[in-house]
Image (cartoon, rainbow over all chains, first blue to last red; front, side):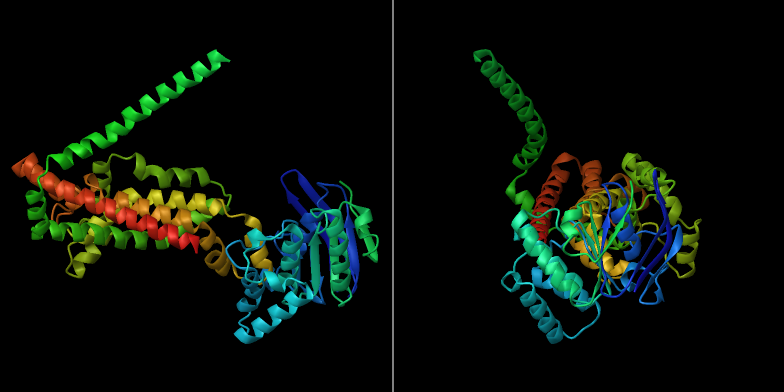
Length: 205
Length: 264
């Protein structure tokens, strides 16, 4: 499903080389490593937000190495959620569907269905600035999943949440993974992914 | 403790005094201007068709060229905010040149660009147009001296938009242009509106560069100078007062509009 071969990337003093990863459909892989080891960079390379110096990225058998981010079947959940502050929660979730020119009534149905699954229905009219961390995360997750990406990239999704919320969020990620989506979860905390991941990859600093 | 409190009060008094003197320095000439203009003179000036024409020309040309310049300035501002490239500092210096040039020199430069000897001037000549002394020349002169204000304000606005949001938008399926249109530009809107207002204001108040490329048709700053030069202070004063009132009203309206729009 996701095949990264000999990825090499250089920016300033940071240098990543010979990184390879092979994930099957439905895999939940934890990418572990200390701060500054380049875990987030790997996610951004897979999402196409950074340009590789060398190597190749195949997703679902398709060579995505040179594809721009908007054409990769990849969803990414950022650590700070990156919700659009000038759009309502509804608009945030509907936006990727509007880009794909889907009919208005279909968009509405899809948004409401995802909002109900993620228990954010009552926030749809609110602006992201008024939400708590956990609520923001669920909105960001809905916005990412609404277009059915083949690979979901998670950048430290639990580290910014309080302990009770973290358990809830982990449960939610487990549910998402049971839909058969391939997940790559970046974290520096092994305990966080012990009950979630069926695979682990560790990179050094 | 007493000393500290005393010291604090003295500092505050000195600061207040200095601030007051500066504010008086700005307000006093304007108040003087207003008080030495009689209402009948002002009403007479409002009815003067030359004055009406020049105010319409000044506001219209400045607004039109501000919008036209925006079309080119916003992409440049975005590049300056987002991209790192060799020669960036040089380009920034280039953008700021019109701010530091004497405006009469800027006028001479613009005149060279549109005169009959230039490529643009020759092209206009073939079509039977003379650019020198035209509203086009006025607009180019206004835009030349005022466009850095728009570029710099918009650049600051784009810089303040977190790059993460643009990355998120790209990964959600948006093209770079859609990201610009629907994420970066709306979030930078307050700064962009400030830039447009500043450029418009600077353009309409321009005298030095405009008078060199077009004495006629007369923009209001040129008309004020012309009346002062030909007939004296009393004759120029009501036009100046009227133009100041209109400037203040226009800017208040634009500010209010900008605030309303950015609150949406």
